[in-house]
Image 1: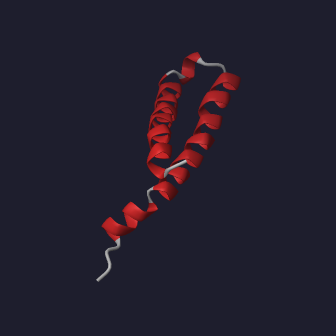
Image 2: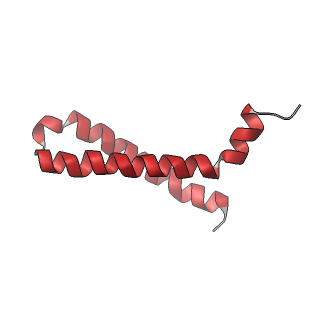
Length: 70
């Protein structure tokens, strides 16, 4: 799979997991502990993995913009 295609899939998935984190925090009083753990804690772990993958896929862009060759 090409990098741009992977990013076109990854970016909306990242957004969904970010929204999941925000919603579970806002409604934590209305969720059971088990449900909160499933959605917030597990979703957070997946979100961290997706962020790492996003960073890896964008590493050339980051290097070119923040660490230019002199």
